[in-house]
Length: 147
Image 1 (spheres, helix red, strand yellow):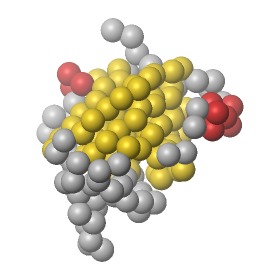
Image 2: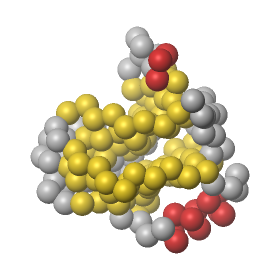
Image 3: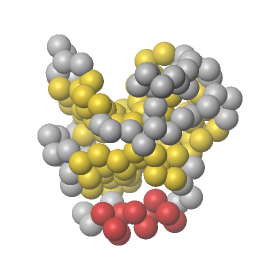
Image 4: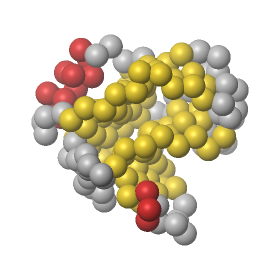
């Protein structure tokens, strides 16, 4: 199995109501250690944590560690272009070309890529994985050009 350090994962996603998708990267799935970039359509309330965001899982007994969200919402019954960019310790999540979450974390440097749906119906199309330059500004240009 190949491992990916710095990369860009892109796909088009359609989420039904009360659904979510996690794009996993730098993953060691066997040991439940990975980062996830999440879009979700669960109902948002002022007290809820149901926003687009990054998460990290640190083992089979661990809970998700959540990154600060920009509090963007994903609504059901629509197609979205999702792009997950990770270079060094920097991670950025884009939805339809707009930055919706970012995180700085250096716990995991490389690993596998995967898709995890925890609930609801999700449709995925045009899934693509690319290596990117180890320079964040150069890598961002690839995201902009792929819109």
